[in-house]
Length: 269
Image (tube, rainbow, N blue to C red; front, top):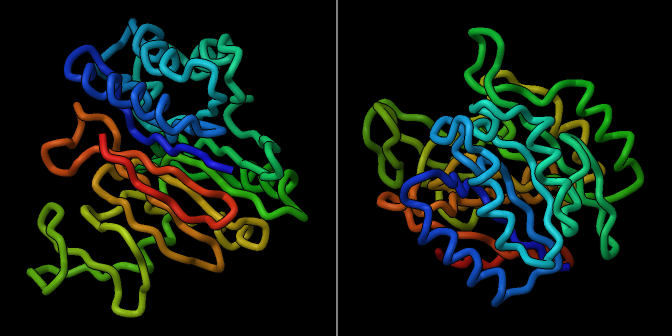
């Protein structure tokens, strides 16, 4: 099965025209069996009362290709609630989205979609965590299967793979006042272009779900395109595709996932 992974479109009033044109061209060229929007499809703070308009500008591009969505931390930062957003999405005949957390069984694959939330209610973390009840829900749906999980914000476990330095080190990238690179024993492909931004609170999501997963796909960190193995699970980080976002710092892109081989091919916007 071929799934097109589209992360962080960040559609908004200004600067999105090229992104939309490019996405339509890629959708028509590749004709994947499923398009997955990995959150932040619309930049909520920039649209406020016009969220539906900018969401439909993106979803209209899918034509008759099935698509599914998860929420990003910026999607509902506007006057449109998540429940209202889901109603808009469900109005499309080719939408497979079925709530905030849900499972799709399609073409022999079990596809799990999780809402990784917005911001944490407390000082312990900036970003929200995947709640224990969400992990229980996921377990109830995928036990006995080898599923692929899709969510916006990457798991906190990723920071165990990264060294942090106060001063410049060979091969390390600067993000803010510190420098980051993968640890020497980590085998990975793709690029670490910024420090990942998971929640600061570690949950047991990876440990609990790993026996029943073959892959986890994330957005959120626009400049990262790395892929690696953790607990026997393929971690697939997708870069931002919105040309109005970080395009001056990294070239916008999408990934085509082959679920049989769990390999990806990157396409630039």
